[in-house]
Length: 121
Picture 1 (cartoon, rainbow, N blue to C red):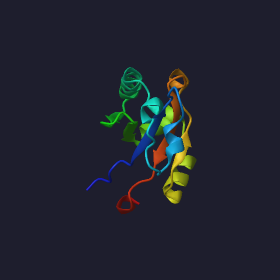
Picture 2 (cartoon, rainbow, N blue to C red; picture 1 turned 90 degrees about the vertical axis):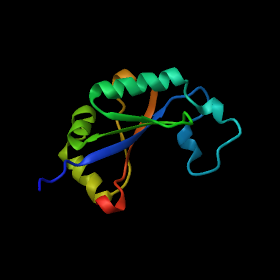
Picture 3 (cartoon, rainbow, N blue to C red; picture 1 turned 45 degrees about the vertical axis):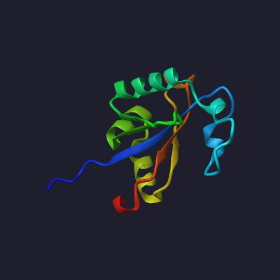
């Protein structure tokens, strides 16, 4: 059986008019959550840009975020992660921030690679 191509997933945090969703951490959602949400048309624009690059894109129902998924090679090509950084991620099993593509910098605050589930390490 051929070995599966490693896949990465990342959370894309969009810019909003007031505050960052990343600042919320694992705490309770604030009463003024709507002010921290990016406009839906901006979410769709970012989603379309990542789909065009070849990523699978997921939009949550609450309007909080955009997640992307793709083969390791796609992340390496788009984000210039390189083999050394790939091995470091695999060894650490932790999150790490990627450089936002210049053409999305006005819409995207940050992109964070998510660790693989325990069963996949």
